Length: 434
Image: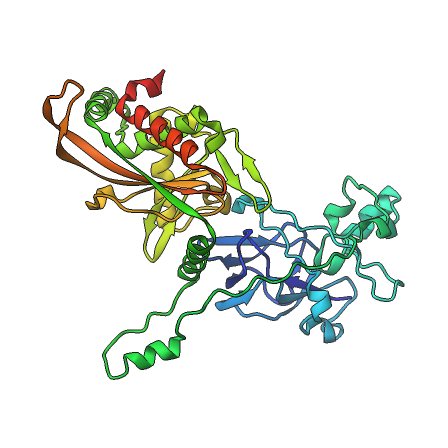
């Protein structure tokens, strides 16, 4: 029976993508693991590999097609002995009940994210046939395995190579999950005026219409949801930077021979990472019905790119030296601007940093990016009069920061402790090297 190749979900939040390029053509023979297409998500172009073997019988979605929904059939694969005449109804859209069970194939390991599809029971509509790839059948025969006892993870429950290698045999009845009542749908948020209504408001005025790309649509949807559903509160502090700036100048002079130049942002990343270790209850993420307390300090840093932004994540930041963090951040930022980051490089983390000080912004309030528990909005450092500990008036370089916090994860006092730890690290930078 011909097998549909489905549009994969290359990240947990992907709902649709652009089929940028086919790497195969009709009539080509492919094997499991072969690269067959390039898929553009909202933030990156990734390679898509086959999970089955056979002959490409028909390409259903031409390259360059935008807005292709996840689990849409994009091509049809023929087994040995099948011809294009066998495609017939298999190329038609799946019935709603079947479509709900379809899962997308995993992207290639080289693309960065190996998210295996959730197992489903083998889909034999009349119970008379178990659907499996020829390769899976051969491996099962060699091992003496009964395909009827295996759980398929391919499209529509098809048994593929990964299901028979290493082979945990599971009865079909046990594999079928018990039916559960779906939760009641949440009431829709009030909608703003439609695009047609807005256009009519400006009838007769000159304007340019800009079509939203996938990244801008995703940013709009995620941040609207975050602002509507995350109970934000805000904590503000001024930080005196004179000691840090002096220490940074000394380090940069010593690191000149190695071609390393530390930025203030590198110190902020390190300060946040160590603060999350000092206040471990704040190093957490919201997971719907629970809170996940993280062990490592995985710090996300907002990077502006044309048309949007990325938040690449520096994992285990508390363990890395300032020079290592600096080099990694430069690499991630450069690849972010070229849209060359893999999903695992910009997903995850428990806390984020957004620095607009370099643009001369004194202070601002950032939006928490779920599931993060908080984000530090960093303003510009400026010379200001301050009163010293001895009561003497002096001039200091002062940087204003605002920490936006998800109240579901972090309460006021805990948030204050975290921000205090960040301030202490930045005002006493040598402590961060201890």
